[in-house]
Amino acid sequence: MLGRFLLLLAALTLAGPATALTIYKYTDANGVVTYSDKAVKGAQVFVFRDRMVERLDRQVKLETKKHEAGETLLLRNDLFAPVEVELRLDNVQNAVGVPSKPIRWVLPPRSNIRLATLAARDPSKPLSYTPRLRYALGDPRLLPLVYHYPLPWRGGPFRLTQGANGKYSHFTPKGRYALDIAMPEGTPIVAARGGVVVKTENSQTGRGNNPSGNYVRILHDDGTMGVYLHLMRGSVATQEGQRIEVGGMIGRSGNTGNSTGPHLHFVVQRNVGLALESIPYDFNQPVDSLPNFAVGGD
Image (cartoon, rainbow, N blue to C red; front, top):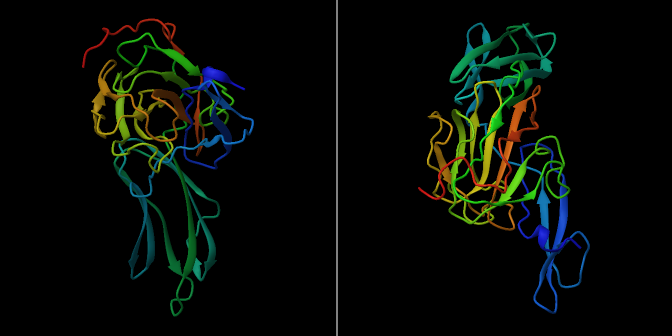
């Protein structure tokens, strides 16, 4: 039994193969609410999935341009962040110009590139192939710089409810070093590091259809990304493409997505090679102390 320590557990992280952990919530005869990993008769079940859904297929697009000489494969990156891509062509028939190995490239923000041009070996017959595209946000060639993060909220002090390598939702490479900080809904959330806003979600209510709830992803100059999750619906105060400085308003804390209580889930990630992984980071002061920013405020 985990007692009151788990009253504000949260679960999320990044897109990819999902693992899950089932937690049971029950109320005893004295009205005390307890969370446990042991099944108890009459308990309510919570299934925590280590997963954050960020749809990129509408912003990273493989396009085919047909012409008299054959077909040209073009890739567009409409994001305000670089994207590492890998293109492989399978089941190729009647085609020349097929790369001998997968094409890997890092596409700059808001750019496009020609990846390959194919022609029919026998012009009287159609050429065919199956494209396989993989991609991940960020440039894996960049190396993280040492940085101590100011606390990304105004107010407090608040309490850390799950740390790095947490058993309940911080147990895969994508979220291993995340921190969950319990705080009232509506607490102002501010940027702990400057950068460019590259992804936001602002319309989820309650548990919604995305475990991360409403969130903001910020790309830092060294290629790392700070992600602020479970924000209050309609509170996100930034937009994609915007440059934000340390202390700039991001939104307000909430209880959206796969969350059992109001809190902020903060994680720092980088592309390690066609995959996002969380990396260790340090705040510049203890979580349960007052932040560097003024208490309260809008």
